Image 1: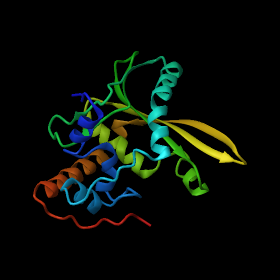
Image 2: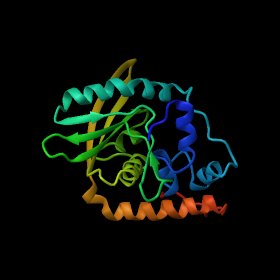
Image 3: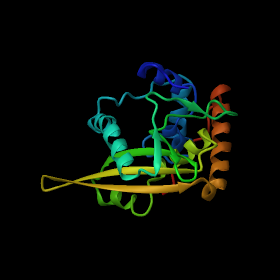
Length: 214
């Protein structure tokens, strides 16, 4: 189900748990706790408006050209994108997501999900989080999208990592592929935690704070 406007998309997104919310549910979001998210979903606080931040504006404008480059680099996939798309799990409609692309592997017919990330690498520690892996909050988002679309067998995260040295910009493109079959236990855990969290939202029960691992 798609929305006609961005405003409608934001309203629908507030009715459930979205991809960027999944890490907070598990206590893996460096910018938001599970209690922060609960307060937003129960109307106790407003979601911070970050639409005017340069990194958000860049990411939004870069999504279309990065998706087009992905199509050129990977003609083995059919890439489908719906502007303001708003999907949900057929059994748990509060588990929602908006994909940067839906993929169909032409040779096999397998269905997948495309996620696009743009990020500025400001510290060496940030760079390390992308070495042969993705940051926890993005990994949780990929898992959440598997819950949203049970028919997806794989997901590809395409990341543009931007670094600046001596006034010069260097950008690195990386691809990470995830197979649903490799994460079945993780998916079950995430589903249980999201059901528990949303039950607390509906019943106005404050969750215990989950502290991120040190």
